Image (cartoon, rainbow, N blue to C red; front, side, top):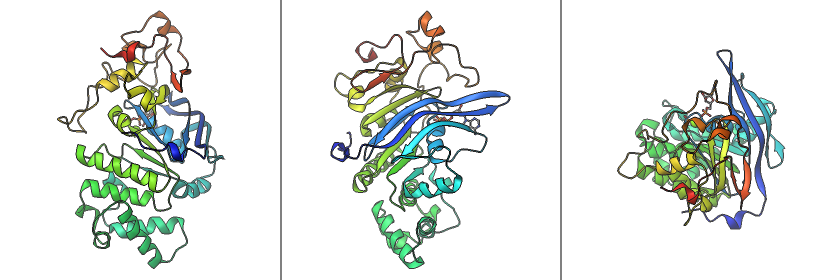
Length: 339
Ligand SMILES: Nc1ncnc2c1ncn2[C@@H]1O[C@H](COP(=O)(O)OP(=O)(O)OP(=O)(O)O)[C@@H](O)[C@H]1O
Ligand SMILES: [Mg+2]
């Protein structure tokens, strides 16, 4: 089910990322964690960023949020409503975080303080960004708990994180992220730690909130199945680069046209109901490459069944070949790569 957002796409791009690069020094070698990534996110739309572990999904989004460690070398551009975020001071970025953009992470337990009641934590999040009295913040915090569909919000306000289920804790974390009604919410594997049913509930909640608050949503996942169900647009990442990008309908609709073998393999690995969501999946045969020793040519070539000599010598660029569909491959799949 894609979200009905086309009516909201009137404000143009909310976020414009251009040639974003992030490098780390690791044991004397350079890790290009994000290597020339460009994309746009329309106001009110849903973008899924998909890829195997280590492909640069988190680092790219943390760069936009200003949440990378000091040693990271960042270049390129990320404009939110026209404001350049790359290179902004910590203080300026802190202002944007929470008010214009917010991020929710995988593990709700680690995002919450176990020794503080959840209501107090939300109140604190509100008062960090807005000058409101304690009593007004309390009222707003209870409203936020209701917004994320926590039953008996008045009572839950006084509970500690350990008194809540994993799904309820993630709702609290989402409530904190929404404290200042951001226009962009990034959910980084926000449902991965949850069971399949709760995962679906949280995804539905995020989409409902997105429409209620006219918010754009970027969600990061290993699971192309989630992208198929919930995204408008899908970006597939490998070794720091976007290797395929298209509207979800084009990739997954009837007669879907996946072009990359890697995307195809991710699609074939979609978890099934009988397999718990957090089980490690045999996603793609072979291992993700060592980021400090990427092969020449296409980084995926050593694992790709279609790789030919040209793939091993020259890296294909990401090119828009058809109808908003970009891919980076010399020998793309015919017929969506279906077996
Ligand atoms: N602080 C750091 N210092 C050095 N390398 C880092 C640092 N943070 C991330 N990396 C490297 O950057 C690359 C991209 O990491 P990133 O966390 O973005 O991957 P990911 O796609 O989010 O993976 P996962 O699905 O496992 O969360 C990886 O090779 C990772 O080891
Ligand atoms: Mg990650």
